[in-house]
Image 1 (cartoon, helix red, strand yellow):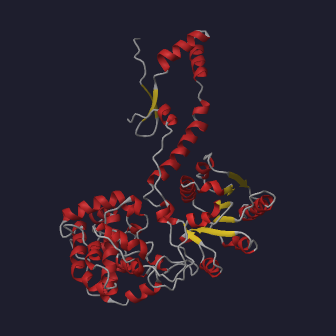
Image 2 (cartoon, one colour):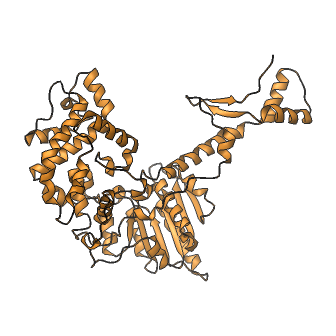
Image 3 (cartoon, one colour):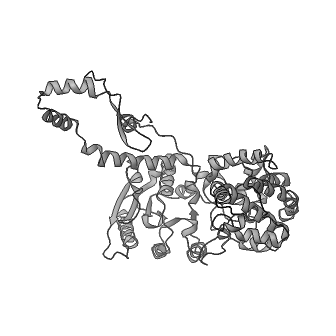
Length: 494
């Protein structure tokens, strides 16, 4: 049983300080995607360590904007050595991630890797076999298979150096594939423990030789982020940023740049098409840097079917927030887009009558339905914040072609920002306890019911003394099954 005082929990005002999110902001996507240095290197690394095809725009709808270059995938997939490394790494990630489930299948149901398609990528096994590696063998233990991956990688990883520019220190890249004592079961188990505990901090949860750090965010965001971190992990420093950025491109855009050029800002949040935790992360970052001072209003337009997590943002009294909940005339039709657009234009119109009219706006939504709002308000400078998986290629191109700056906000709430996730969950737990449980519990009613059952009476003074002497020191704890139990109860003599 765990000691957990309800009183202590509700009185706790100090929260762990949230990390600075701005370092994880993606590079301004208005820069031409044709520049080969932006994601060229990270695309090659992503291919080799086995990042899923969908992040290269493969197997998805055509309107998905991929994180990595499809051209790099197609090029490297034609090379036998690169294919072998990719599928070995992909296998190792799956074996480590699904170790318990695969172990059960192999030992209880007497199966081998080639008969567990829901846990082991069969296409990787077939690709390796086609390239001359018969990976599956009879009477092979799972921990031996993981050692096999290490041993197979040894001769093939060096043959992939040709895919990276000569100025990159190859040993730093090579280290990503080989863990310490990877040719032993013990070495792999040690690495597996780190991976299991910090899996969400590994790039796209791929199993590599990496020392995870919560402050890194998505290390494969682009070349300008990945290379310096890679060098830092090897106790080195990368100086020549001209190799990973194009000096001819426009300056990078970040919140500081946008707010520096703005007098008064409106932030419009489409709750149907934005992740609550990521938006909370953005607002906390802006608030911490004092940029909220330029915000006239944050329009938070929600639908009755969306997440209760928005309560966490609504409780922040430092934010000039207006929350509007739309209902549905028809179950299948939301009114959020229309409501948000109308409210936005009302705010613009009202601000024009003041001494500080709104001249800038941030739209937090991946929905392209808001493009007319941007197009029909040329006097307003817009910044759009979207999510990778929810932004259509058409919308991405429209924003880019019209020089509308935008960010992908996915890195705002990475697994490294566990404190933020904890805070959102804790706020909802506290609300649930207070509103649905504590509000129904009245100590005086409990005492009066007890007195009635045993046919006794106490006056108001006696009840107050009784509470102070016997009840006040009791706390509520939780058993392992989650049930609430009284603790620190007074010792009864009879």
